[in-house]
Image (tube, rainbow, N blue to C red; front, top):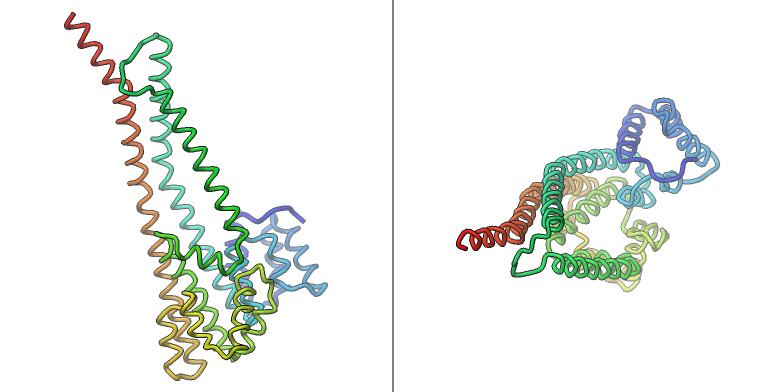
Length: 331
């Protein structure tokens, strides 16, 4: 067995093609065996997965070491409704989109990164020129002091961020999600992501004929370190006290407002399931649109930062030099 997760490209390939094979009628073992032959670099991993499945292990457990956290979160819902094909199909589609967005992100950063390197080289060259030629520039501030203070401030900020991150990781799963959904700028995106996952999986559950009590019971038996397990345990407590779970989900920003409307229409579970899956698709498109908007802001922000650095270099080096040249000419 190979150590470490599969690359993003391999994860996309695996779930997209596994979904296609399962839909055409392959059994899980046959589909994995076909992928093993088609993807030689995953051969040993897939052999290990197949052997583990034959020994009685669950698909979710054996695939976890190879996939990212986003996929693990989506796969955890299989423990509730058991609809493996629907989840794998959706994972393949989402991972394809995530991979494409990552590639776009890298492409958008390439040009600003080159400009930052050139600007840094220019600043370093100017500093070396002034140092080697013993030129004294009468600036309003000392560039070396600014670099030292700036580095110190940056170091303190990094330490604070690391400390907050470690504390955040120790917070219980549900509380962590609630805190994250209160962070400015990303709260709307996180609510849409959670809304998508909840609408999609509740839709599958309703279409599969799984009642609410069964959903909660199965969820609570899952690992408490996962979102599904922690949510199930808390919902179990509410259910035992006779509370309305729909109200609970809405109060905790776990259920979109549109989903509450769908669930109160009085339609059959099958029709409500279809409506929720349609709502999930709308939420997914909204998430993609929000991510695209964020990506489109990357280059303008980078160019503004580069402009500030260039102006700073000009003020630090060139203006004092021009001033001294003017004094020499006057003399």
